[in-house]
Length: 217
Image (cartoon, rainbow, N blue to C red; front, side, top):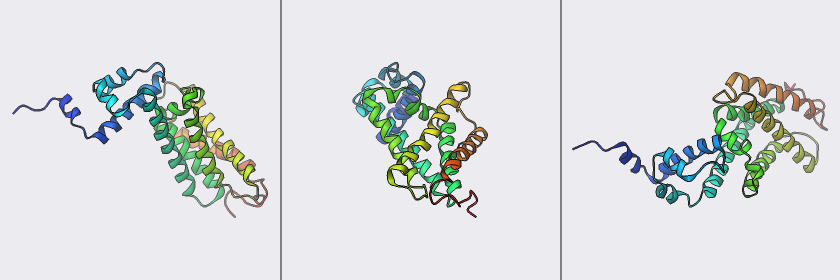
């Protein structure tokens, strides 16, 4: 009996595995060429499937892109929250959140570019999804701010901290397009410390935080 061809093996992927593979391939394509310049035909070809197979999983390019944005956004939120929650000291929580965020930029540069670097926020049909990612990050980060301030103040600071990570990450990727991951781990750690120091310089002066030191002493 002859061995099955590679294309036949691909065709036999379970539905869930196939969907994940298509999302991964689409992520790479969209991150490089953007939404408008990437076709479903190109995605199907890169994934080694026919267009009908791709459309079985995603009825349109828009729905595929939306699912990617939601998937990547949730991954980022989960990592940042876990990074901050793992620490007890206020400064270390801040550093842990920035470290998780910038490691995501390093390890998942295409995913970061998909949400924050390919113009998704400027396309009306995707603006809401990108905003939801930022809202979730800001809301969770605000919850870690230990200070005697009102909810509106706390929420604003959450968005400010998210903005620091987002803009710094996007700028670094723009400055170093030759790097496969945008940031290497060592650079990510240095930038995380710098951003944490900058943010902590302001947070430590908030009501209730004036006597709190980065060491917790």
